Length: 161
Image (cartoon, rainbow, N blue to C red; front, side, top):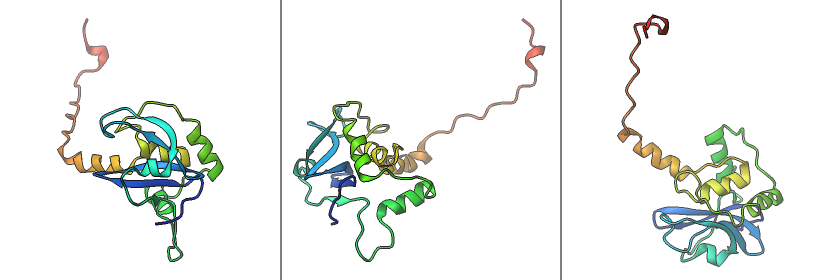
């Protein structure tokens, strides 16, 4: 486990998924908070204590944390992998300001606007969820392809009214 610093993306592992937020400093995290089942109900962006964010998880992970033996942080690796390193990240204070600007916002959507989308947006300006990308990649072989368009033999001008 790495020590979280202000503006870091943090997460906890829950049954079947990871829950993300932005570490705001002073033992607080800004994240989508849900009072009921996390996959089914709407959430609200709120600032809570780290212990409330962690809920029944026992480890807080820092996505952009590094130990002394690592060349790159996991976050740097993700940036290089997903965007060829073309994305710049906001500094810690601005990352937290971006997160705080969304406090009170509803609109959680598992596929389009989840806690990971929120956290990546705060840090990079791009809403991205690797968890959703993994699910979609897994489902891709089962999704039927749309039929190929058939070539039209007549031009629009040749069609009679």
